[in-house]
Amino acid sequence: MKLIRHCVLLVLALVLTSCTSHYYVVRHAEKLNQTDNSPLSGAGLRRAKILAEKLSTKDIHVIFVSDKQRTQQTAAPTAERFSIDPIIIPIGETNRVIKELKKISGRNVLVVRHSNEIHLIVNALSPFDNIDPIPDEFDNLFVITKRKFLWSTQISLERLKY
Image (cartoon, rainbow, N blue to C red; front, side, top):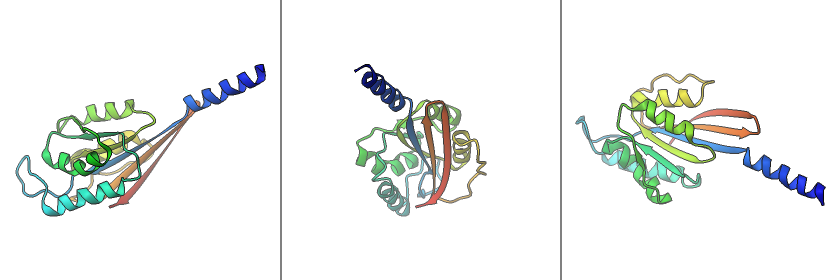
């Protein structure tokens, strides 16, 4: 009986100390114009729906956006699919976004930010790779996977297109 109890406790300890997080990091989709708070264009709205479809099986738990409507509109179809209210962190507060992301463990997260922030966020979450600032592209999907098991952490990075 004691052996069974010890085995159960060991399995429970292993489960509690292991988890996997996925961070999906994208730039906002195509904007309508060059104004400071431009909404998405028709192409951008279509891309936002494509992103939601791409992430439809990923069980997203948390979404981070900026205070600009283009990031919020890019995240909106995914937020609706998973019934999530995105967390708004103002543009330029990249270090705050990174700090919040590093607190998350065992959850899947969508991050929709701006071109000048994407590489900083990806590099902070995946220190083994060094992503350069992205050009004016809207179809990059960076997937950082962080697996924790007991005392070790394994991090991988994929750069996909959507």
